[in-house]
Amino acid sequence: MYRVLFNNSDDDYQLKAQPVVKRAEPYDQYELKRDTFRLALNYRDPFVGMVQAVPKPVEIAAKPTNFAPAPFKPPINWGVVKYKGYVINPQTKKLVSIVEVSGKERMLAEGEFLEGLKLLKNKKDSILVYWQGKQKHIKQ
Image (tube, rainbow, N blue to C red):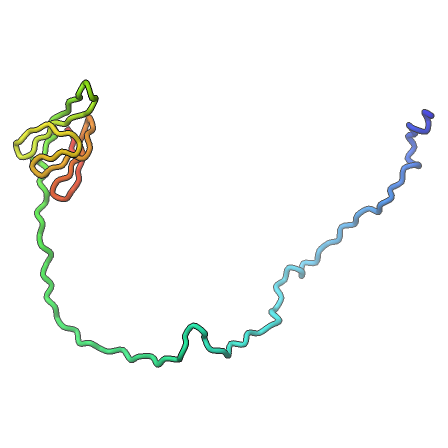
């Protein structure tokens, strides 16, 4: 029995399937081939509807116009706005800034106004203000 199960001879083992032979692909297989159809473009455009005559452009005589120059807006003088410092409320932990506008000094929280200046954001080193239509960070 030993000889039957563990027979090492190669004569008993034969392949039943044939080995695979790889064929080389011809290079003309990737060549572009000519189209075998033609378009018949002798129909009307369905989106146009009726054929319309092209209107002639109307020429309008150019009139000289005098443009007034844009009104001059004086630059904003940010020198009158000064950030003096801040105070922290120990109970609420809110930051209150000390701001001076045109010589008037006041303590402002976020959203409060002074002489038309609105304090948008309190920070320890600077404030963000809105004044005369512009926003600016002002440092201490």
